[in-house]
Image (tube, rainbow, N blue to C red; front, side, top):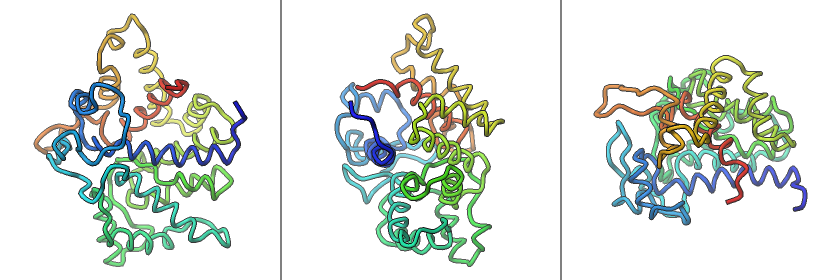
Length: 292
């Protein structure tokens, strides 16, 4: 196999993120593992699907109800998470000459235009709140709401900026809709990890070194994920024997969050960083070396 170039790695990071997001569109916001398994024909997903395509056209967002969360999308489209990455790619292409530091102020007009013209995807609470703030003239540094739901929006920036600290800056700034330290730190963590992998580090080494450097919550969550992978791959563990072992693994890595809606959210499978970060690390470490 030919050696992977830096450019290949950057393309792989971006298209891998967007394609994976598009593959999730058919079941996005569905939290029932068995329902997803049956919808995909009891096998790994092998094609793009429209929102809830094999689930009656709707998914069951715990705490938010049964609906089509992405009414403007069809098979091959992206969720709101993928949309943000495409938005940032478009913005970086527009400001490519001359190269410059990333600015939320210059991103917002593009964001507003996309948001106001057939966005087509679910509009998260923080996006709605930030949009209202911009309309009211809230200063850039005070934008965003208090949500611990992390997202990765900056992947295209790996093709534009050279240094890890520049990429960390972009990762945090593209999350301008959020102010929670864990949500912002989650984006920073994966910016550091991805940068290191692009430059030749193994995923495990990149994850472990970034976790140690960031420390605290992030180091603890990575340690939790590593321990869970060990448990899930141990033939003698009860978790290994479970049909939906990954579903149980993710659920177990964060609390059951009863926020007063109709149903409690199993945070390990939802958006908060306390479950999303170790969940992503779990999948990378468990499956990253598998070709199929």
